[in-house]
Amino acid sequence: MGVHKLKGPYYYADYYDFNGVRRRISLQTENKQVALLKYQELIRRRNAVKERMPVHITWDAFKTKLLYHMSIDKARNTCNRMKLAIRYLEEMKKPRFLQDITPELLQTYKEHLIKKNISARHINSLVICIKTAMHRGEKWQYVPKRDWTTVTKIKTARGRVVFHTPEEIDKLLAACPFEAWKIVVLLGADAGLRRGEIMNLRWEDVDFNNNQLYIAPNKTEYYRYVPMTESLRNALQRVKNGAESDFVVQFGRVRNIDSLTACYHKIAQAAGVHSFLHKLRHTFASQLVQNGVELYTVCKLLGHRTIQMTEIYAHLAPAHLHKAVMNLPKRGMTLVGVEEKTICEDNKACRQIGVDFGDLMG
Figure 1 (tube, one colour):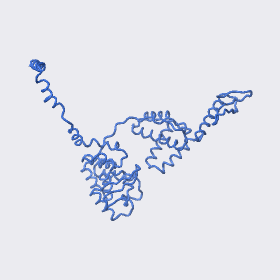
Figure 2 (tube, one colour; figure 1 turned 180 degrees about the horizontal axis):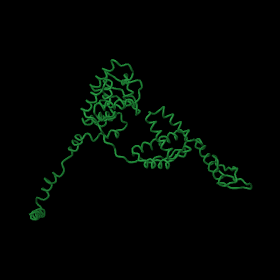
Figure 3 (tube, helix red, strand yellow; figure 1 turned 180 degrees about the vertical axis):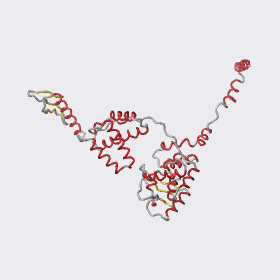
Figure 4 (cartoon, helix red, strand yellow; figure 1 turned 45 degrees about the vertical axis):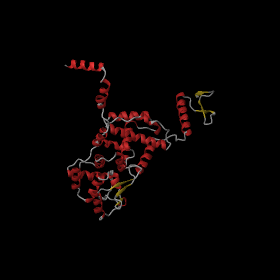
């Protein structure tokens, strides 16, 4: 198989079709280098048709389609992160076709980000974005499947879990200018809601009869029920009397998650407390663990998919772990008090060793 000349001046290429029949085609060129390039393109086209994949998918066309679909399915922050990852990739080397992005190129991309002194966590996030884009291209059958696991994450230390004390929560509640903002603090600290769940909570999701909140799927695919504390229930009842919207949290004309974060930051500054919205969720989980609630129960209340995600709070129950270890049997007491006496009681050699050891110590 390859290129060769016959009687005429042009080069010919031999290849096998899908049925295994040998074919011959004229490459219409007298230059061997050009003939080899045409032959490689011919084989690539044949393989693409065989795998039912488009022959030429430009990077720009794929990028436009990808970002359009992400704007419909994903949150705005996720789309912005993908745009940033694409910008860094094109800054290093803009691919012409989607097929040009390989695991080897992605490894080079990771090294390029390391040289820019970007944090390890941010680099891992950007690399995952490109992997996600390529998985989407494989799902759309634009490119063949590749092994992306060869591009590993940079090892990073797990961050320390920070949470508020009860006194700090009281300061945040006192700094809230409106009753609706107290609900934001209580939904995080007393119910463990994510900021997206706080934004999307509707009054129809508040069940006063059963004293619980129905949390619709947001970050995960599962819904959950969270019981209401007395403080949260009373605050919700006060706000519901004058509610003019279907949403529990209503502030201003434009409702987006960034404005919620900005407004809460102002409240934290007024209270003199270093805080962010997700810290309220950490507070909810941390106080449960410190009060002896099992991790499995905390996992269900937080809406974690696996209990491994909840284990970051395990160190907050030292008393519980200490009590478990103290249940182990005593070690060494039986050996010294009983076995030594029974074994050495009538043994002259043992008594002589004891005498010699005593003389040595003296």
